[in-house]
Image 1 (cartoon, rainbow, N blue to C red):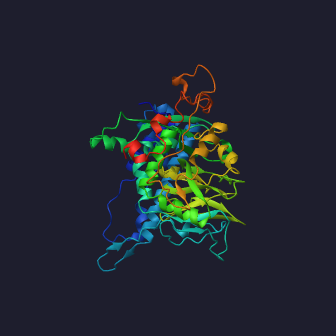
Image 2: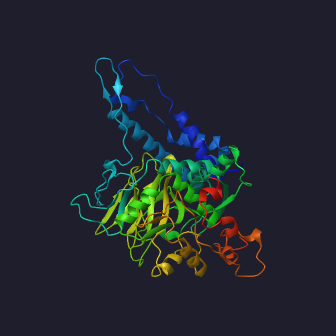
Image 3: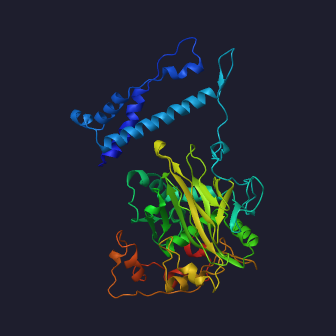
Length: 469
């Protein structure tokens, strides 16, 4: 396996630091306040040793170029943070004068308010019951932040179910490593193919399901205005979208849909897209809206999936001022019509951390907002234009209705739908191209199987029967 200089240097750093920080014997009258006296490293020697371990020649270790300086900076910052953590842990221990036994402090929660910044406003974040939906309110006076900014209590199985699915499918490993080992350039995209861990489980249990189905996912990195290394991972065809709906069904997402529908006074809800946002560093959060002019009937529901222990608040939501908040394990954040929000500034690179949130788009489709819904370009699926509008219309009211009788668990799918290629001579092997932003695929939607054929989809049949799980 080949590695770039930067990646090899990062790997070598681990060995270098381990050698440089070997513990010295402690004196009999050792005191914790003196602990840092026993830490010692020589910066130049550490860097040179790491470069040699990485396979560089001796004369190359004397060069002062961009890679060397970048490595040195990362190494020293990582070591500084490590020592600060040691210092904080030691100084916060409670030690007995008699037997010298020390008790560590209780572990800090990820929604540790000590990491809040005085430059931001803050929100009320009390625990919510599964499906309990409440408008976000400012902590200092209890006033409403924005009409379509909502916290919703999570079912206990939702996050574990989503995490287990992406881990078993292989996507979790890609999301946690790609941003370090093989990041995209701003504006670029890439494709992945997976197979369902649910279907594999069914086959192992003796199901007569046909051969394993392949699911297409797309990852793209937004352009430079985002000021981060954020990557978006999204389902890229109807089959993978339908699979995502089964994940949410198993995780109890029906409770979330019911809570949102009732709180927001909606007629119905269906899930439009399912994906993830991953980031390791963000210099400045890009404040934006996901939806505007949709009559308060379209939303993005954000759920924290992975967050470094050392990380701070993860999301900015803007009202009269900017406020910061953790996603938290108890509730997700719903942002809707005109809700300005963005990623909170962060830098998890020193400890190779990644922040991951699940993004679930949902809407109450009407004739008045159909054009706006069909024109959304956040993810590659569903595509935009008339075809997308026709498909979105077949989804309306599918997953929750104020009249009852609709759910993810008992989902019978969309209405009948078919699509044709928009150009002649479409070739299947050209459907997945990293360099055309899906344009060829969107012109050859039938050949590329962007949508399922109705004979396979079976509209009106419970999804459990169609997919076998």
